[in-house]
Image (cartoon, rainbow, N blue to C red):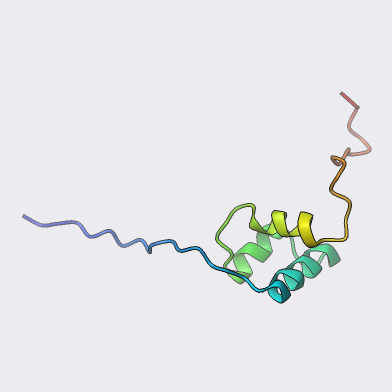
Length: 74
């Protein structure tokens, strides 16, 4: 009888420095990469981690939802 071995890596939470977070936010806000590209490039595990950083440390106004100019208001 053979036993199957789970080959996936165990996920661990990482702590990121403030300087690292600000660097990622700056690159995304400059348009150098999307938040998803930043996640992949820097190995950030959480799906919404970069978005949280953008809201907390970014210079853009996140208080109002974005309304695309060509979409009708609902």
